[in-house]
Image (cartoon, rainbow, N blue to C red; front, side, top):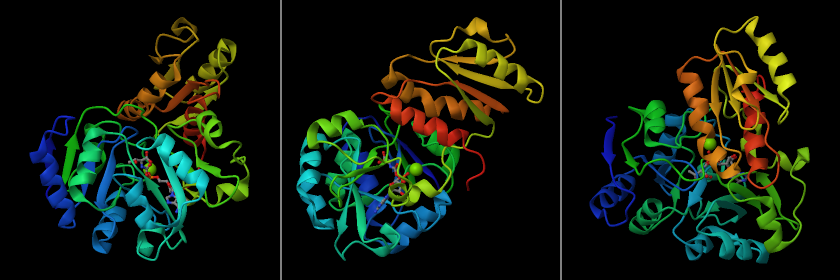
Length: 338
Ligand code: TXA
Ligand code: MG
């Protein structure tokens, strides 16, 4: 397969590029495109061969279902057997946006999309290029994050190219994505609904809209999201999280790591750079969660590129987006899960 790079501007008026992308998808091809969260790898949600290619290009296990992206709520009704009241309220409040709803599906949705589950995950992304593409194509577009399985989600077209060059047909490049973390996945088939994956839409905003939601730390609930079975965001180096503001622990951890690791990186937001030896690479990130989340996957990829054997990260407080940031950091720090 030949990779055709297409650089476009984040501007829905660039109709030629959008038209071309829609044509590639209609022909069963794969197009990576920007959303407000991360770049997605798009294919026609009704084309079995194209969906197979998505799994193959990413090296994704076939029992991990895909999110179907649609242009608006009316299109979601075509895929869902029913959308419960709280789901509709969430969709009306946060679509287009970083929210994925898991609802009962109709038999029209192919089994390969949902990995055989009787539910389907649906999202309306909030990005002019993604929306223009969805409108032009007309139907649903499956779009997992456009990374190789096990790598951090891509927040730039360059990250997509790094992972999928030669495996896909086209990339729509609209610069870095705004949020930098994936969408929040909410299962609304139960009452109260459950957050299956923390993400760009905070629990606080969801609860303000529909009231209390179930505790997603519950292991049985977590198992409802197949994505939780797999290791995500695994940098080459080991990841160690140190408590926020705890420079004594940071120093001790770095000292111990230096006994066995040559290249160490630190990602810090409130601890001063002078607390670590000058031989350690330091990324100073913003204390503002929105800015940290925007940069997180880019920094982790950069640590990989530089062959860092260990990454020490200062924890953030778990309010708002901080909760999704800590979720991704813990997954990155988790040893061993495939
Ligand atoms: O922000 C995002 O959601 C990005 C952009 C491109 O839209 N997409 C994305 O897709 O992160 P992916 O495939 O990397 O993650 C989808 C997650 C997985 O954890 C998967 O298991 C879960 O959603 N999922 C999909 N369908 C599901 C279903 N029917 N029930 C439960 N979980 C589901
Ligand atoms: Mg992913």
